[in-house]
Picture 1 (cartoon, rainbow, N blue to C red):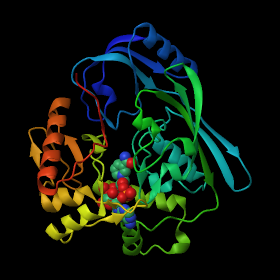
Picture 2 (picture 1 turned 120 degrees about the vertical axis):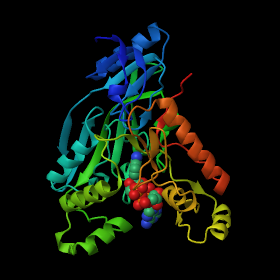
Picture 3 (picture 1 turned 135 degrees about the vertical axis):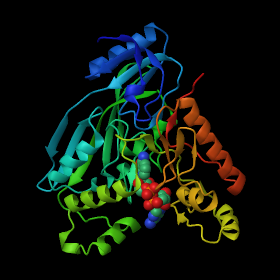
Picture 4 (picture 1 turned 30 degrees about the horizontal axis):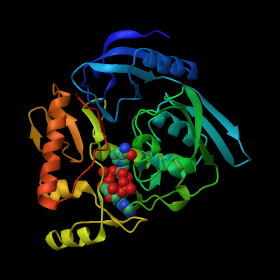
Length: 344
Ligand code: NAP
C-alpha cells in the first residue's frame, strides 16, 4: 500500500475545510485495511477512516494519525428466493448509488433513504435514517476489522446496538474499521408514506396509491430533499449539524408551557423527540443567521453552511454559539450529529 505524506484533507471534506494528513493511504481491499492498521501500530499512531467526508469536521491543524480513505468497492447481489435478496456492499461504495441500484431492481426498503450523502461504510455508524426509515430496519450484518488485533469481525444486526442515529461503532470510535455491510431487500413491499412531508407531496401532486413503487418514492424523497437541503456540490456543508434532541416527558411538558406550539414525537422509550429546526426557527429566529462565512441554511437551520473561506475552527465556534443559545432558551443540551474531530 502506498502511504503518502502531508495530503491536504479539505478536498475530502464536504465542509471543504481541514488541515493535512501526516500519513495518508487509500484502502481498496481488506488486506489494505490490515496493512494500514499494522502501519499505525508500528508508528504508534491511531487510524482515522475517511468515507465520503460528508459528516465530519476535520481540524485545521495537521492530523497526527494515519488517515485511511475507504475505497473498498463492490456490490454483490444474492437471491434468497424469488422475492428476497441479500446484498453485500463494499464500505467505499456511494450510499445513494446503492439506493439507486436497488430501486432500479424494483426492490423495497431503502428508497426513503435516497439522497443521503456519504459512503456505505459510514451508514451504520450513525444508523442513517430519513422519512420514517432507518438503516437498521433492513441491515443484517456489518463486516469489520478489529483495530486492536487486526482480525476480521462480523457484527450481526442485534450486536450493533442500533438506536436513533447511534450504534456500537459510534459509541466506540476508532475500534472497528467497517469493510462491508449486508442488507436484506425485497421485491414485495409497501411504500412507507407515513411521514408528513411524503404524505403532503403525494396529495399535492395527486399521486394515486396504485402508482407508488420504490422508484416513485425515490423521486418524491429526492424532490423533497432538494427543496430543503443545500446542494452539497454548491455549498460547504455536512447536512444537519445537530441531532434532534430526545428529552424526558416532564421536560417536554415544561417546554410546552413556555412554547405552546412546540412539536414533539413520542419515541419507543416514551421519551419525546423534538424537531430542533423548529426551535432554531421559532424560538431563536436563526433561519439564514450568519456570522462571517458561516451560517444556518435559510430553508433548514439545522444545516450549517460554509459560505466560502471559513475554517473548521470558525464552523466549530459557530456551532457552539448555537448550542449555547439553545441551552439558554430551552435548557436542552444538544449533541452534534456531525463528527467534530478534536483539534488538539
Ligand atoms: P423534519 O421532517 O422537519 O422532521 C424533524 C424531526 O421531527 C425529525 O427528528 C423527525 O424524526 C421528527 N419527525 C417528523 N415526523 C415524525 C413522525 N411522524 N414521527 C416521529 N418523528 C417525526 O426533518 P428534516 O430536517 O426535513 O429531515 C428530513 C428527514 O431526513 C428526517 O427524517 C431526518 O431525520 C432525515 N435526515 C437524516 C440525516 C442523517 O441520517 N444523517 C441527515 C439529515 C436529515 P426522524 O429524524 O426520526 O425522521
